[in-house]
Structure formats: C-alpha cells, structure tokens
Length: 305
Image (cartoon, rainbow, N blue to C red; front, side, top):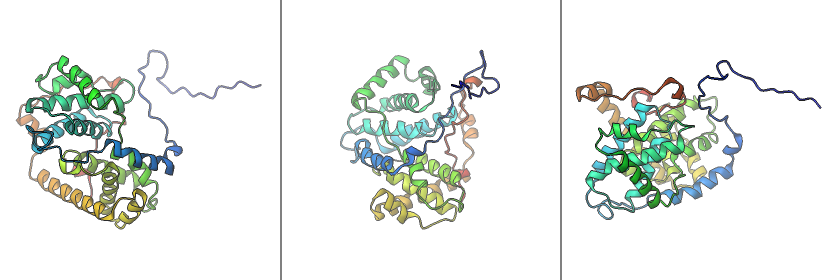
C-alpha cells in the first residue's frame, strides 16, 4: 500500500501565517434541478405576502424603511460584506416588521440587529460584522446591550428560522439553465443581477415579489441591458411564475435603474456627500481579516446599458 500525500502547501501558509477564509469550490450537485425545486418550495416560508404598513406598523412608514435600508446597504458596502448579507438582513427586517410593531426610534436598532445576524450566517469564518463596530456605525445612538437584546428578540420572533432563501440563491441555478454561454459574459450578467437585487431590496414595493421572481427579473434586466433580450419566457418555464408578474417586476427594475442613473449623474459621489456631511469612516479591518471575495455590487454606474 502506497501512502502518498498529495497536499500542496501554498507559500505563506506555514506556522504563524495569517489564516484567510477560503471559499468552497463550486459543487455541480448544487445546480441540479431538485435543488431549484426545493428552493421554489421553501421560499414561500420566508415570503412577506401582505402590506404590513397601516396594519402591523402604525408609526413607521415605507420612507423610514428605505432610509434604514440605505444605511444598512452603506454599512455593507463600507465593510466589503459578502453580497448575500444585505438581502438576507432585509429579509429579516421585513419578516420582523410583518409580525411585530416597532416605534420610530427602534427602526435603526432593528436594522442593526438584522445586519449582525445576517453577517454571522453569510460571512465566512470569523469575518462577521463586530457588534461594537455596528454600534459605532449608528453614531452610538444605540448601546451594545440594546443590540444584543434585539438580536435575541429578532431570533425569537422569527422562531430561530433564519437560514432563509434570498434571490441570490436562485442566480446560479437559473443562469446555468439559460443558453447564454459563449454569447455573453455570464459573470457580468450575474454581477449586474446582484446589483439589481441589492438596489431593489431598499424599496418596499419589491418586498411583495418572491425571491425567485426578483432573481429571474434581475437576470432578464441584466441580459436586456447587455443587448440580449428574449429570455423571460425561459425564466418563466424554470420558475413557473406568471409571465405577467415577471413582466411587471422587470419593468419596475428597469425604471428603478434608470431613475438611479439620472439621480447619480446629477449628484456628487457618495464619498463627497459623506465628507460634506462630516461623516468619518471607522478604521479599516486588519489585512489578515479582509476577504477578497467580499464585494457588495451596488454601484449602478458599473451597469452597462
């Protein structure tokens, strides 16, 4: 019997070297049709199917939700979080708001707790957002004790069912079933689709769409922007969603992107606006804790139309 070790040790991986989180290699088993079918069945459990403003929520408004969502997105962008963190945090936020009333002064605290939970679930290794850093991002308007208490409150209200399905989970499954290889840069399509998903998560009007609907329409919008139209029918076959619903969602995504492009062309970049407002970023994380795969793709200027 031959005992041969085929392990390859990369430079800098010896003793004392910083251990960076490693992304798992792509697994073709996770792209099988049964995985897509399971996600389509499971997403209903995490969907918000009714308008909770005016019923459950009597103090806060969709505008307040948007302000908190934009702040959450800025935190994820500033810390280079994984793309899945922000949509999952928004899912927690909407699920909580659909069952439990909150006051105006508690919305940012709720959003902070949702960010903390989502980063713990979707960030690799020990790269989750530190609780004390999140308190700093609120300009110390909350305390660490408050954040920890609300983290437990969110978990209890969601019955500890936090491994939710988001639109990001559908992207590789849908893209792998479209006949676009060799016709378009699939990585670019996926990057644009992720951008649309993150931007749509800020608006309450997209909350009532299922994750699969948002994923399918984001892909269709990305392909249309790259001058490859006509895939909406195939996406409808894959997701079994009403074609009119997909068309409506697609039009809303395109309107949202066009309005954002106009808005950003007429406004200074985020960095200049932050400096004008006296915003001071926190210290950057140590190099050994940074993970290169983190890139929240939310700059609409990177989308080609």
